[in-house]
Amino acid sequence: MKARLIHRDRMAFDDGAIVEMVIWEVPTPVEGSSHCYKYRLFYGYAGSRVVGYDNERPKGDHRHVDGVEEPYRFTGPEELIREFIAEVTRRRAT
Image 1 (cartoon, rainbow, N blue to C red):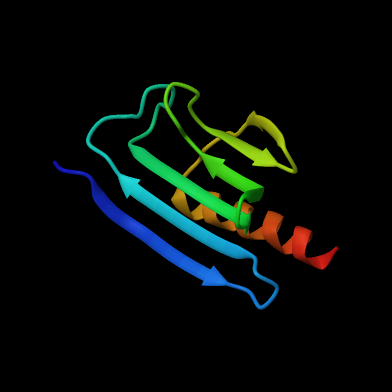
Image 2: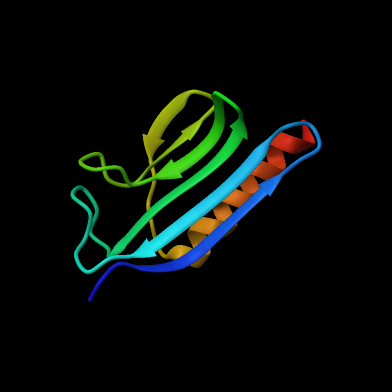
């Protein structure tokens, strides 16, 4: 099996903020992760990440919120998107 794109979305807001989500299904887990997905979700401005979720090797699943990196418990692509959008919504409401 080759890597298969399962989700891609990009949105730009009037204030210059960007949301970009990319999720791939991959044949073997990315080093540091136990599932067969590779993902990167970004919310921020040019040169400034406010919220990010990714599973960069060898770190595995983690998230960045306001400059702080912490582990993230990946349970599936749908939950990942839902939690990311909820975090972005919280940031945009402040």
